[in-house]
Image 1 (cartoon, rainbow over the protein chains, first blue to last red):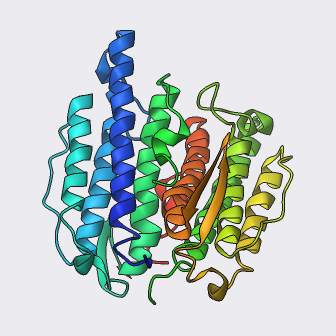
Image 2: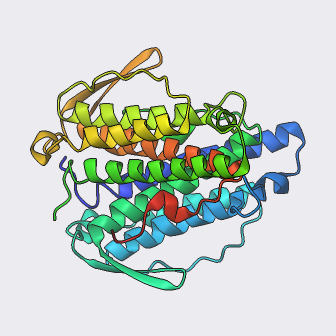
Length: 170
Length: 170
């Protein structure tokens, strides 16, 4: 299979978010087995001005949803960021996978030069689809899933690298 | 520009490692200005059985170097993991960028089906170049650079998301 804008975006993002769901399931099992109030982990931050676990999941979801939609020339439907529990965050991650699964290669392929307008804070950046995917969408999703993993690892949840990567070769 | 195995690997990995150098420079400036023993941050871990900052940088370097070399049908030269200071880690990151810059599109493009043998712990995984790049090399490099960022953020270094991503559109 040749690399394309679709193969470089939708399947790896789905894989990453499926792994995120598994990481969150281990977080949920940990608080259950240890008798920890789940909201402690949901609201945990690695530093006071960093985002908590819940927001890491919400941003990973939004960057992936909006990213693929923009490459396809669409707007992703808005989702309220109101998750406050592990089951709700897992549902958010799974619903994101379901949404990404609605895209076909025909919708995403050939978007290398498509101009994407991206509002970031008080600026609007414009860049073609290829750098948008490779320098914004993917590093960003991996950042927030890794930070969710790090928050849970730092809190004592037993996770390993393969929970994040998935089994190599699959 | 069309997406290819080269455009999806070498330029984004170079960008990520250049951003890592900048992150480490801010870490070095922080310990200098705060009078902190640099080795405290170099050896800092988010959890006792996670790798320290130094190892995060070394792994990010190795996965990127070996990853692109394998796609090109080569072996990356071995590097000893002996960095114990910020300047040494920054040099490791910069040397990795210099090495990645030696590859041409002709060496990497068309490697989608090339079978890669990857030793992971006590197993050897074999998979084609496309999933090797998209499900192992890139998520792994982003993981270790994000974890380096998170270690420094957790330790009070003033970093923002754009230190990790680089300025959008460039």
